[in-house]
Image (cartoon, rainbow, N blue to C red):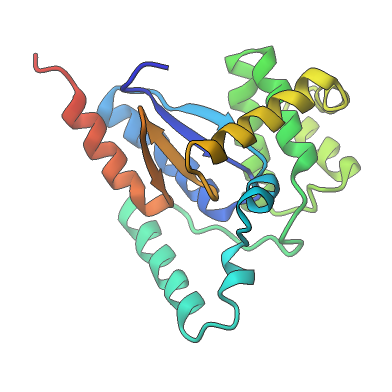
Length: 208
């Protein structure tokens, strides 16, 4: 990774990662810089950092979740994207999907890009119980992927090991949740930080 290449550490089970995913293409177009998508397991990050999801962590904090909803509404309006629909099965165990993302990435950029789009779509665009392998296989197959083959690869040691490595590496670099972004050694957490990421990318572009 070059110093100017932004990394997006994501787990498709995060609604804020989904919203970030919807915004990133426009940032790439404006900056001329492509993001490197890095699959991580959010549950693993939570376990390693003793963190919890906002719903669990702030459920008893008066006004906190209400502000999160306002913040999301502002984000959606700012970037003119469709708001997500809460997955009725949330929180969803994403181990299968994130191992599948690793398997897809090993098969090449095109397969990986289509996999990520489909996984986010079926988690948040048209919410389903994506922890159920039969449901996930049918959904991803309907999106034109060889889901049976990709999910079969989730049992391979190289895939399992790679996801554990990216998750552990994320924590060692300072991550505690998703979405997390890195530009060089600079870390940014949360979808709202995409504005700062974009500003940094623009500032780093060489003058013509």
